[in-house]
Length: 494
Image 1 (spheres, rainbow, N blue to C red):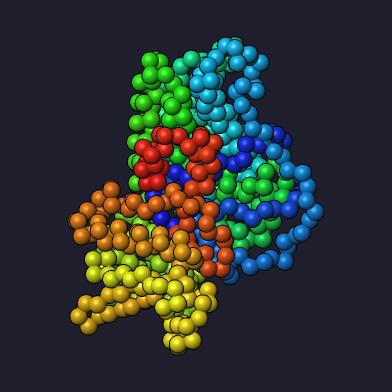
Image 2: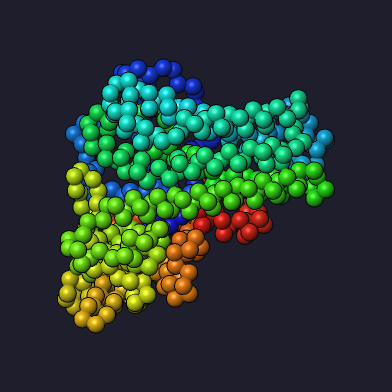
């Protein structure tokens, strides 16, 4: 299940492994010999989520290909983790307090993260964009759509890295970073166009993978050590994951900064700046995502069109569910209307054909069904068994005069089911309170940042998953800071 938001403040930046600068790539033959690829990570699509287009919604697009190759494993390039205290030859035990050491580590992590980000963005351009353009694997227009404004982000982060390195003293320590961040962070507004383009970029990339040459090129890259077993989309999603990580990084520096330190005030100001930027980009990306899906709805008759869909500016959540006959449906919860569709391929694009009339959230009735309560296939056989197929159901119904609908829908698991229940209930509360359609209502407070790794890819996996594994990992590394509670609202909203 994919929840609204521009980016799930969850992320997972590529592993902390050093990447060797890539030499010039001019042909497929010049790529490093292949290795076996690991399963790809999921991606959702809001600052806190990442973009997600599930393969189960269109199985015919991703069936095994005859040119896929099984090859023996090879060594993979790794990016070694670095700590400030291990990088610089200083007697920190005698010179600095434990709190100051932690502050220096947090500042160094910020700087090192910028260096890794720049390296990865350059790699994406040199190893993917340029070779595909030169070999005519994709057209320049297609590559511009997929890579968006990625090129413009590189000098932006190079600027921050240069500023951080200039204030670093010979012994490796840094006294002040707050003023640098306050002056630099407004530049991140340029992320607006890049993040808003991600839904369309991911859709085009998935579509192009049906092309034999594109798939073969991407597979060779994935199997090559330089990729660190990350696919192209992993690299294209790095800027989003970095953006939503800044609030955590800054809070960690602030947590280890003494109250009387000159950086204290600047860091608090910097945190407010980045939170505002992320929230604004989150809203715009949510609107972009909503528009993308609205344009791909297929109406079987004019009577299915609804102004509630046309006026929607955000998708609260969407994903694949099954009815009690096992039919796969793709369900969209917009701000004021629930739309049940079937995923279809139209003009070589993944589209969504309306399965029934849209259901206004205001009149929608929601019922949480106990396991075993639903009858499968219109018979009694499933009502008295413990079969997995009769678990995790809920029911939505609607009646208005002569019009009535009842749908028993099955989620992937209990966690996924609870997310749907939460989102629908909160959407109903927003409509009842008259706040649907406001900026606040576009991002109902579903607990998007919890239990990120619960949903593995499978035939019945829903797009309503919360890809916040990166956030969880960083939070653990940051020792479950007390600042997490106050940060959680913004991180889950994005």
